[in-house]
Each structure stands twice: as structure tokens, then as C-alpha cells.
Image (cartoon, rainbow, N blue to C red; front, side, top):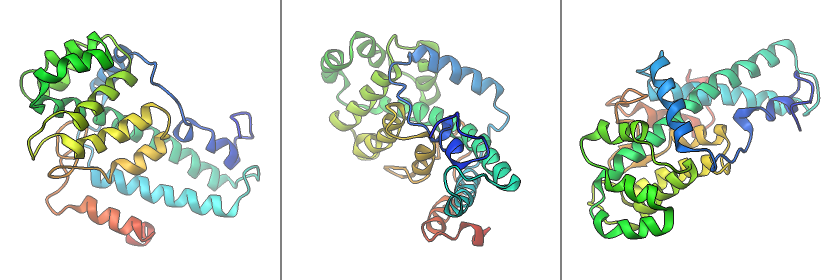
Amino acid sequence: MALTDPKDTLAYHASRALCAHRDMTAVSCKAVAGAMTEFMKLDNDKNAKPEREALWFYGMNHGVALIAARRAPLQPLTVWENEFLNAYHANMTDKAVRAFYYLVWICTREARHNQSLAKDLPKIGELFGPAMQQFFTAIKGGESGISAKFLQETPKTTIGNYCDALRWTFYHSKWSGGYGGKAWGQVTDCLCRFVKGEFTAEMMLDTVWTLSHNNGPIFNKGEFYECYDSKYTVLRVLDVQRSGQVPEAV
């Protein structure tokens, strides 16, 4: 399957950016921070609701699955089917960009709770280089300030190395019961797998709604998304999706 396939086929749509495994580990943090800053300036949906975003993803993804079940990869799609797939890719690509930046933002912010940082800094330098050792050394201040530091004092390293360093601290450093630790290591796993190309953007979106930290769903950090509602509707969406009944629920 390739982008040279006819544009009215499943083969073409399966080769688009949303569904491609792309290794971006060598991309500089500077490039990511620049794109992230621009996204935040132009964001017209600063209060995106995680429940709504998840419902749109699972609802449209269900539709794609139904189309894929009745068409061969190079069989021409109907006009309606092709329009639906184009809408799916346009909408979900935007949602994947938001989810990626959110993961970078919250994992960076959580790193400030490391209780063994002073002891860990030499090891961080050994494993991930002096730029990451210096970045962690400078992590001070409030919640928003920590994440903003990635944008304003971006470490001179790659996004792959950056995410690996974050993940290492969550699994190897000392944390209190309510912060960081293995739960955040698992959140960062999703980020790292997307950056390494193990997850496509579509797979990352399929996973991100299911992620939880020490105190519940990850969508309570007040940036890129509104906090999930008090009724935990995002968990209800996941329950309905698990049974394959999102269209019926809508």
C-alpha cells in the first residue's frame, strides 16, 4: 500500500499520515517546541472536552471499520465512503496533534515531583547526555512554569532522547505515592511509542483516552483540554466503546 494508490481506495487511506508508522526520534526538541508554541497560539479549541474528543474518535473509527469490512484494499469506494474517510483523516490528524502535545506537556510537568533528582542527575547525564541533565537540574517552579520551560528553554537534544529520559525517571527515581512513578511511566510509554513509530497517530489516539495516572484519568491538567467532567463520562465512553456500541449510544 502506498500513497500512489488510487485516492478512492482503502489502500490509499491506510497509507496516510494518521495510519503511518513514523520514527521521529531524531527530530530536535527545538522543532517540536516551535510547532507546539505555534499550535498553542492558533488553537481555536482551547477547551476541547476529552469526552467529546474520545466520542468523535471512536464513533468515526467505528465507521471506518464498517467500510473496511465491505471493501477490498484497492476496490473503489463510493463517493460517500471516500468523503467519510477524508473527514476521518482530517479530523483525527488534528486530534492526534493535540494529544501528542498534551502528553509532552503533562509528562514534563509531572517530572518536577522527582524526590531523588539530586542523586539521579549524574545517571541522567550518563544515559541521556548533559543537555538533559541540565534541563532536569533547572526544573523548578509551579506547574505551568515547568512545562513552559520546555518551550522557552528547550534542551538541545532530540525528542526521542527527551521522552526516553522522562520515562526513565518515572520508572527509576523515587516518587511519593500520589505523583510520578510507574503510573506515569505507563503514560510516557504511550508517548515514547508514538515518537519511535511503534504507534501510529491513530493507535496513539486509541490509547490516550484510556490512560490514567495515580489519581484517575490523565485529562485534568488544564491545558489543551478541559478537565474531564465530575461524572467520569470519559470512562463511560470507554465502556461503551469496549462493547462496540458507540453508534448506538450516540
